[in-house]
Image (cartoon, rainbow, N blue to C red):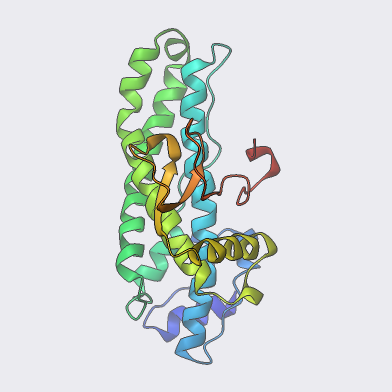
Length: 245
């Protein structure tokens, strides 16, 4: 814990041990091995943290959408997602201006803004679910209407997070990644060798046109069309086995 406090303090930020515990889950602290030997090393360690944060959020946001879709069809009870979008660590990195020298700073700021907006709407949506469980089971049209605002955030947020996550994976040493991430990175690198354009999407069913000239990177491949070059991330990057098919 002293290490992450040190990197923040070294970059004109001040944070206490107590304050850190308020924004960083203890389970994640064990993985934040940061030192300040050099700016280059700091960038690599920040990338390592952001890879994990985006991984959490890719899973959390997709599960929010999964709960929404299950509620459209299930008549036995209302499904509540367990986790909101998480922003605390990214917020601290931005607050202490640690992203200024990073090539992906603009994309990270965009993702953070989207996560923050989605988090606010998520809280409103869950409150609505808790207060109107019986109505949701019987009046799906009202449920759709009440869920519209949150749903508008899902697709662009997932797309931007996948895009940034893959960018970070490609530039990170394999020794700094877990085995699943290395496998995803290597599969992506093999696709890049085909010299095709890359298209990132949340769900392939959302694609208006699919072309053989593209490599498609998606979270969920639910298209009825056959896509020859595609990487589906949902099962490969699932946070829990129960979140796979």
